[in-house]
Length: 358
Ligand SMILES: C[S@@+](CC[C@H](N)C(=O)[O-])C[C@H]1O[C@@H](n2cnc3c(N)ncnc32)[C@H](O)[C@@H]1O
Image (cartoon, rainbow, N blue to C red; front, side):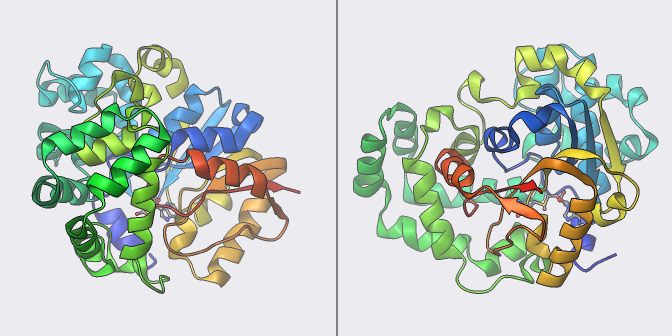
């Protein structure tokens, strides 16, 4: 197991996928209808691909907890929509632990074993239960109140124009205290300690917090916070508008989830191992996995990805802090990526990358 794989595999790191599903689907375009390969992570984007009509989705992760979560999200089609929301801590109703008991017989041994051993994650609100979500919660609960009161946060939900958001950010939000505390909390040291792991920073060079502060500004002034579920979770620890929920928690998505789930196949192994056995992909959702690989390892992975893809296949991926362009034989779609960068609702990343297999 590689150095970075150990902390990634040992615990639930991501209860949600923090990569914009709308950017992913738009980047993959018509290729979404074919055979997709997706990093599983928190499951939302693998499910979004299946619900958008992918013929098959192979969801791969080297982390059992991430796959157990993805499996539970898939299994939630057996509950009513309100129950599914309650199971994941985004609505009132039957206790999540009771709802889990109704699903456990339908899970694989691996997923059942993981959830049986972690009832506290279920009881405490599953979608906030990843290490990364806990880190964001610490910021929201402990630090943010020292900077901006509830009223000032609420105001973000009322600002309709980009001009109004720009003005509000400059005049009311971007105080010296905001900048100072943000820089401390989102420094490499604190993030490696509480939010990611030191191994996830092995390839990172240069300042981290200032880059993230500028991306936070972009999130606030970019697409409306009313349409941005990622920003809403960051600011309020919940989704404030029903319409921002991920596809699998919407009425239509929940209704279609049972059928979609049959087309999602979960693989507990590294992508590198997976590509030795499976192929014929039209669409690749690669999260930001290159971030943890050195340039030679990235080039090697691209060679395998290209070999496992059909001509014209599309790939979408992100980078937080480590630039990792497309590998040989993959044509970067830079105009499309630049357009998508403007729409990207998640603040952590550099502009998304999109490439097409030649
Ligand atoms: C790449 S991480 C995304 C993290 C987040 N965007 C960040 O930067 O902190 C998402 C998922 O990828 C999985 N992962 C990372 N490298 C992988 C690999 N080589 N093969 C399979 N899964 C991998 C992790 O276990 C995790 O669940």
